[in-house]
Length: 170
Image (cartoon, rainbow, N blue to C red):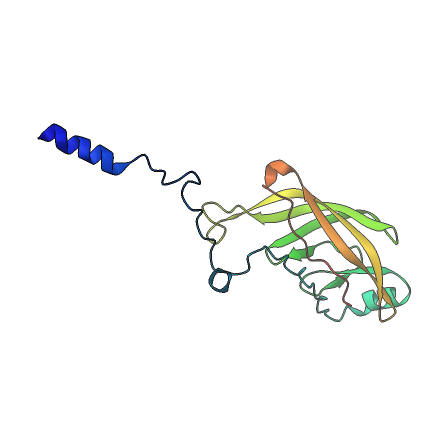
């Protein structure tokens, strides 16, 4: 009797294939519920110009005389400034500039970065050596400003290069 039940169970279970085509392919998700059937390239983010704080009179006169300025994330205008806020959570300080002109600017200083241990929200900070490069001179209301900035650090100090939001004010 037990042998007969086992044989019936094996016969009824089959081998899993109903026909030569095999099992039906799973139905794709409904795009009306789960989004488009094909990936759509997102639009490039729009970068807005930095809101500029009125520069000190000496800086304003130098800009009017043709000097090139830089506007940091806080809107502070400077010419070879000793510090820059390059992102919401990044400040480059103690900057010593080795070049500054229409072809670009270069300098080095100390960047304060989040350690993100155990999380970025609850982490501390550390100071690391960094280089800064400014480029792309742009004229705004008769004054010239660098329109791009790049901060470079040793790869051992962070998983990736820090993002910088230095932009011309127009």
